[in-house]
Image (tube, rainbow, N blue to C red; front, side, top):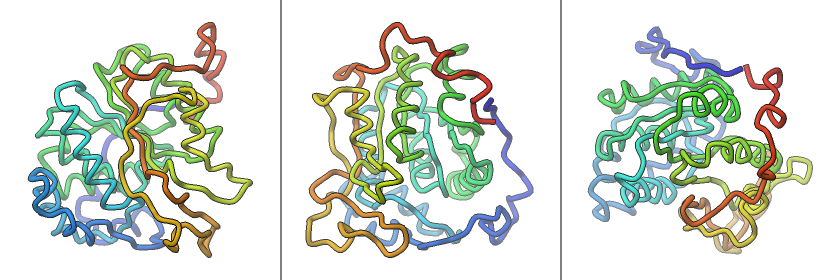
Length: 283
């Protein structure tokens, strides 16, 4: 069963935050290094980048700068239509810090949901250092998305929520998460999903876009966001680490409005507790 946890204040003075939390750095990729391409196109994004430019944390991002730009622009375009953003899967806070940086401009609260307490703590501290004025609007939920739905959304509601999903990319797990959201569909404004272009080894079943189609139907309506890679790009070939690659011609992410889409799965007669028995919820 999941639950909210408090930020670890002992991390505020940590110089090597990732080492203090035992989080390894693999690629060290920082999207902000490519932000100059978007300078002058969107003032709010420019202000975020200015604040983040002094961030000296050792960390890495897993989204392109194109995705972060489009994510912020999507928040702007939907401004006033939601009052809470729920981010599922934080890793080291690449998207989270963008979301938090927008919380004041667009007046929303931010709930971070992750099965890793270490990733939650790293992300909150990254937010606190870059946007201290936003830290008070951020809550940390240690558990998976079905646990969050059970403990937070079903009993108390979340207002009008925008969900940003960048958690597990495995087909069955994405379907699992989206199925949980179907039970609180009246609370959902929209769902933004990342890595819809990602593929990998067959035993991992990485098909995020196919999971969306399984739940919302093959005729689902979405707005593409993020980077689209051409076939000649090296990143459309399996990498040497785990065999992951990006499908050419496919968007990095998708924005699905609940006003334009309907859950085709699970069956309307399904019961939450039958699909998500309490004893199997994440701790």
